[in-house]
Every structure is written in C-alpha cells, then in structure tokens.
Length: 138
Image 1 (spheres, rainbow, N blue to C red):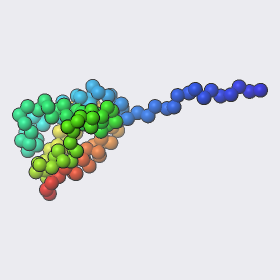
Image 2 (image 1 turned 135 degrees about the vertical axis):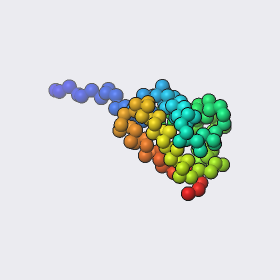
Image 3 (image 1 turned 120 degrees about the vertical axis):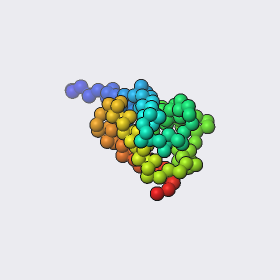
Image 4 (image 1 turned 90 degrees about the vertical axis):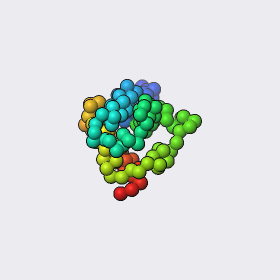
C-alpha cells in the first residue's frame, strides 16, 4: 500500500500590484510624492491650479483610492461619501495638457519611489487609460 499525497498544501497566494510594490508604505509614499511633485514642479501648474491650497486631504484620498485600485484594502471605496472617480473629475476642464501633466507627476513619483520597472510599465498603462478617460476636452 502506498501513502496518499498530502492535500494539506495551501493554495498558492496570488500577489496583487499592491503587494508587489510594497504595500501600504509604498502606496502612501507614491501618493505623497505625486502631490509633492505637482505642488513644486512648474510643469504641473495647470493641474495644481485645480486643487485647494492644502493638499493633505486630496493626498489622503489618492492614497486610499490607489490602495483599492492596486488590489489592497478598499479604503476609498468603503468611505460612505466616496464618489465615482469619473464624476469626481467631471467638474474640471481636463485636456491633453492636463493629462500629460498628471502623467508626468505620476511617472516621476513612480521613479522616485523606485517601483520595479515591470510594475512601472504595467501601472503606467493603467494610469494612462484613467487619465485619458478623465479628459473633458481635446
């Protein structure tokens, strides 16, 4: 008689982008760097003008949104007052220039946070799709 193979092996754990980039600490740092760059880089003046003077509340919202979007805790989506990300951007005049400024800030933030190249490329595609969807004018 032969021994049966153990079936107690745990199923493989699938890693989310949230896990792969380093979890909460890195997502929080990414949101912080994004807004620090937007606040200080003259090349982001159009999108900076769309924000309140105090960036702390929107920085927290970006962190919470990215957390869930990347497969981590759905912090933004669990807020009772959360809004659809598309409707949250609808009041703003967003064209190619604003999209490009946003992407410049996010790409720089990803580089500064030293995300792995494969993850930067993957996230860049998702961020670009989102930024294009926010455009309200050409």
